[in-house]
Figure 1: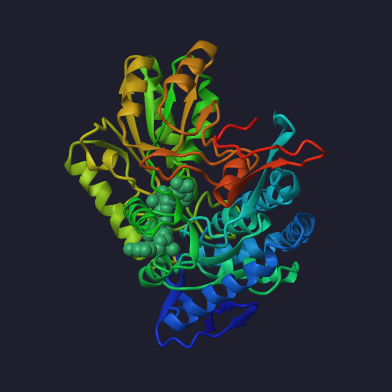
Figure 2 (figure 1 turned 180 degrees about the vertical axis):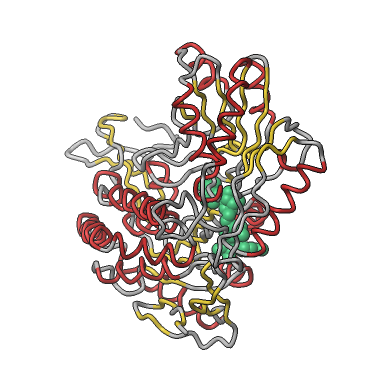
Length: 496
Ligand code: NAD
């Protein structure tokens, strides 16, 4: 049985812990590895290593730090399919979807390669007579990243490459449900030339996170995961005077106008709703049909009904199993609740099993119509292959519906009207908007900008906002005298 190592001070070591968490293949729940629950001493050693290494890493010239990222990007590309295979083995994701998970992470590494340009400050000459002002940005110190199960390559790569390129050192606490992929990412990072101690990896769950959140030497915390844990992490980190950015759950609506291209709408909604078994924070889980667009619900349901879940290496499989039996039980209970509360279940995937893999966490594609805002299937993030359909009469009603939802991660509108799209993008209270694009995840030269209950903090992931999150600004005001030394003391705060 493979034991997942910790990475402390540049060494992959076996934990001294007596407690382990099983890592399973979600297709049949067989155990494929065991991840340790790191001991307090191991957490302390990781923080000490990161703290000590920061003193030297921050002095490494920024072009050299960028070159580590360049080598890392190259290695990730060379090992792309191998990482995707590993990722599929512990998440059940189809190979194509796993490759997307790796690729969208590589794109962030490419952004981190721009560190020299990103780390440039500002200057202004002659802000007063003979006085210039300029700013530098400098790294913070030890940064912490806590990541969820659903993107075990992309989300760790949202965090440590940007933090490290900015001159910080990093401790990663990946999801205990799929720690093999992040561990492989860490191995390749060391191979790319990251000095020991720049990245440390600790495994475990709640207690290990809490220990790190309460550690005096951790300066900043990046978290991605569910709402209750995101709120807890944000409150604990900020209570401890740390900088925090916490990306949480979602309920993403797609608004379909009657003038939209029906083919484009249907093709996009199938993948955006049940793709990855709905285990995406940017999945479309609510389709809001405006007026006559509601006549497409039946065709959409038929198309979603043709979607077949299957094994990661089955080319015909559209998506894989849910991550765990607990996740499956939760989704099935929400589907049942939807039926009990009076939603119309047009397609029911509750009984789906894959022959030969009956022990796996399979849920078939499911579609509800006649969903109302008081139902649990509307209020909760289902995080399964379940689409809720709603119908409104006007664009204004659709906007009011979306804006009254407490989440604000992503949304999309399908329309042929520039005016409708413009109105939607302007009035909608959601941080990431797609226009005829179902899942508008920004590329890393922008930032990942969820709003409302989908994000707690100020500065978002990757792009310019991540650079500001992982750095401090130092502003220098300087005067160099030639001959005009002032004659007496200046008793004011004015710059003259
Ligand atoms: P989760 O909240 O259960 O776990 C996330 C991380 O927090 C894991 O590393 C876990 O070990 C740790 N953790 C769990 N319970 C904890 C506790 N009580 N105290 C401290 N740490 C704890 O999330 P998950 O199930 O792994 O991921 C799915 C969730 O992540 C969904 O809600 C999804 O929407 C969200 N997500 C959000 C985004 C985004 O960008 N907004 C992206 C991906 C996933």
